Structures are given as structure tokens and as C-alpha cells.
Amino acid sequence: MADILLQAEGVNAWYGSSHVLHGVDITIQRGQTFGLLGRNGMGKSTLIRTLLGHVPQREGRITLHGRDVSRARPHDMSRAGVAYVPEGRGVFTNLSVRENLVMAARKGRDGRADWTLDRVLATFPRLQERMTNLGGQLSGGEQQMLSIGRALMTHPDLIILDEATEGLAPLVVADIWRVIDEIRTSGITTLIVDRDYRKVLSRSDRAIVLQKGLAVLEGPAPEVAASPQLSNLLGV
Image (cartoon, rainbow, N blue to C red):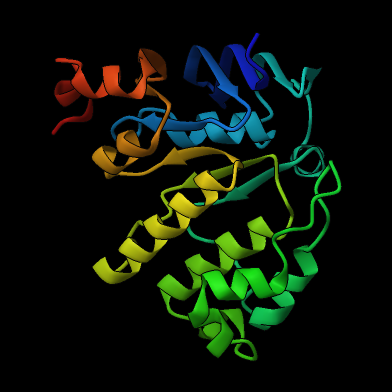
């Protein structure tokens, strides 16, 4: 039997009176790369925020490592081994690059400590050059590198990348995808949301497509990529 890392069953979520997610199911196996697709406003970020405990109005069952985390709060999920690279990056603008990275550093749940400061800096050489700069002095691409590096230094079991390439220059985008490939090959379970659905699907084991808060297409990534529904669902 495959090792399930994260599972959500019948997830509903609301913002006030607005019912955003409608009974979504998602299962992510350990070591898997999972793609989350859909047009803007279809519920992708809400699903991520619900899984992480950021949406208080929610129903359904969510398990992590087989343990019920349906009512967990964001810091509980972080401590349980989930790292989140949010849309908008979320770096501490008044801390230096070094401080942003070192403050997050901790061993993984299994004692892993392979994503050291040196390894993160080798992965993102630009950060090495910016070590004493404040987070607010970095370019958008450098902030994204810092956000991913900080997440890796928590040695997560699952890393969630929400629009990691949004608004970045093409050369930086290529660099971010290179790092995503390195994360995948390192064995970290990965959930990716990105507008470039072709790149997401080419790197994913499985994928799900949301439409108006409903999971309308799900399966192995090659099957999702070949689906005649995909173009209409994504508006491409």
C-alpha cells in the first residue's frame, strides 16, 4: 500500500457567506509531486489555505502522516513538517538575508539536516552575494529565492509552492524551475501551483484541476495533460 502523506476528504470552505470549496478530495503520496491547476478564482489558493489551517470556516477531514489535522492551526501544520512558499513571497523585509534563513532553520521530523545554509547558498548563489542585505532591498526574484530557501531550511516533509514564478523575469523563472527540479529529486513531497500548466504537468506525478471550487479533473499527470477537457478548464 502506498504511503499517504496528506489526504483531504470532502473539504468545504467559506469566506463569510461565500461557499468557495465544494467537497474537494485530494491524496498526496510521500515523495510525490502533485500539481494543482485551475483558472484564477477557482479555489486553488483557498484549498491550500484550508489545508494549512488559515481558513477558519471549513469542513471535511484532513490527515497528515495519518493523523487528523482537520482543525489544526497554521503553526501546527508547520511544526508537523509542512512548509509554505506563499504567493507574494512573505520574506521579513527588516531582516537580512542571513537572518531570514537562519531563523527558520531546524531539523526535520526524522532528524534530517541536509538543507544547510551552505547548501541553500550553493543552490541560490545570488543570495550569497546578498547575505547582509535586508529582505526589503532584494528584487522580486531574489525574494522568491529567499522564500524557497527559508522553507527548505525547515527540512519539510511537504513543501507547497504557490505561484512561485509569478511576475518574475524569464531568466529568474528558469532558475526557479531548476530549483523545483532539485527539490523533487531530493525526495521532498511537493505541491505546485503555477500558471504555466505545461511545466507543472511535466514535473508532476498526479494533478487536480479545480473549477468553481469543485475538483473536475484528477489523475496521473500524463492523463490530465492529454484530457480534451483541459484547455477549456484552464481557458487556454
